[in-house]
Length: 385
Image 1 (cartoon, rainbow, N blue to C red):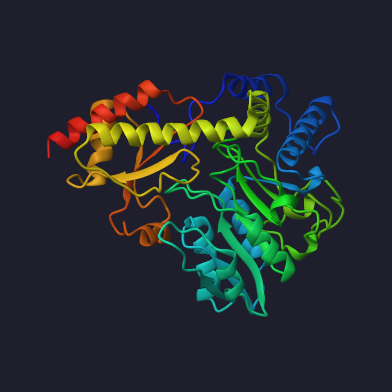
Image 2: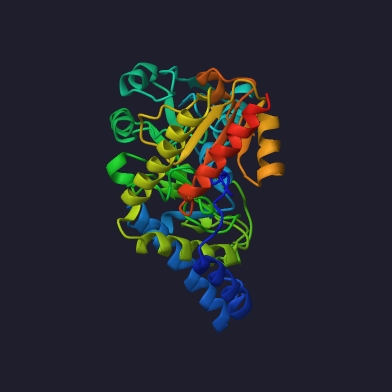
């Protein structure tokens, strides 16, 4: 039983597996590097995947979709590309290390001033708190759209409005929300959106993207990598136009084939993203109710009254969560994740630092009967302590 979809989704839809197989066995050529027909087919695949991602997030220009290896690279591209010496950056208390580590590095180097907002016990940011934290040199608000620890969803539109009125750019880490929550860059006031292709977009690992809003001058971003683009090869400087300015080297073409298929699967689901979000919330509450009925003691780190991306963090008071993960895996073949989940600030906010918690993250294919079996397993483990 697989309850680790916040790390990467599994299993992948059959159409995704077939798309990767078909690319590797029938196309296989590099895109934008040659003029032959197989290279042209690869180039068309890349464009179709850009267009699919742009359409999913309300972006009119597909060329403002920059492919990366993962969300971490997308976030690093945005943070290191935008921040200049003397800038002030604001972030939140639930951030993944992919946000906080690059920001902390820049702060420790004396490049930026960094403010981590204090919030309620569940880590959500209020627009008034953001407004009070702004300074004259504030360049960027960087925060997660949904927590990988609690599954809570941060409303972005009110924050985006504050940012836009004050000339601050909003960078949203949508690793956990893309493919679950309806996101529209313009409506939600997002300037830069970092997404994972391999989580709830159901693509393969090694896929991600940074989307640049229509109002963002792409020349503000310094490239993270320099190199071959298949364009302007007679010049020794990086091209200025998108996506080439920010996208160098051979892309993960097989991964993009799978990502395009994954997005197609989402579009074909009855009810769309609203139905996916509703199902995720149902599974979290189904699990929580079953635990409350069967277990004598369980501490939830997730506020179950709030909308959730399918993530629930918890502790059994008498059981170390690392041991709990080991028992679940070895005895019951249940896959979850324990510890700090690469988000120590989140656990400090929740009061679960340094021990962390156990995390189950449910996916599109999770069944209630699997959750029932997991609750039985937790009861048996707790009984032994």
